[in-house]
Image 1 (cartoon, one colour):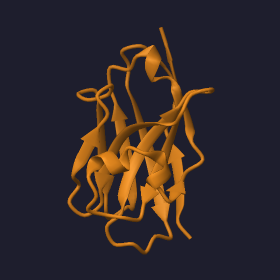
Image 2 (cartoon, helix red, strand yellow):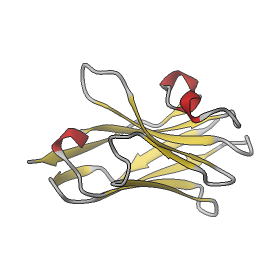
Image 3 (cartoon, one colour):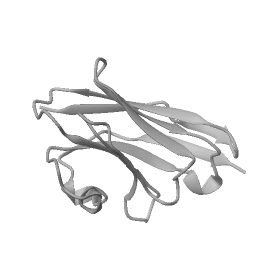
Image 4 (tube, one colour):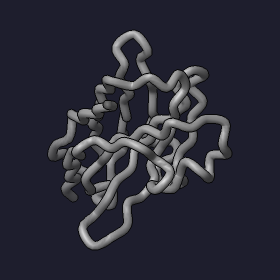
Amino acid sequence: QVQLVESGGGLVQAGGSLRLSCATSGGTFSDPVMGWFRQVPGQEREFVAGITWRAANTYYAEAVKGRFAIARDNAKNTISLQMNSLKPDDTAVYYCAESQTSRNPWSYYTRPGNYDYWGQGTQVTVSS
């Protein structure tokens, strides 16, 4: 059974940085796509960034492009999300997710329903 555990959330001032991590275990699929999503209460879960496990191809939502960077560490079975130049609008619960499919267009991986496993989430709060 796949388990995903996020860490690294917290409170930061606007313009600051945070680094989120997601530790993965139990997976057997050789080339999953890993994604970061975020959700504000009362709103739908929103795609933030994705990465393919083998080739480390990445894709970002327009709202975070140029400010966030997703990466994976094969040896440690972790993915990370480096978040710079944070804005109050980035405040949300951030979730790590794994899709046990591959070779679909990135539009497929922006939809939460196409992911098979989710972490418990970590709160990120950006104060103005």
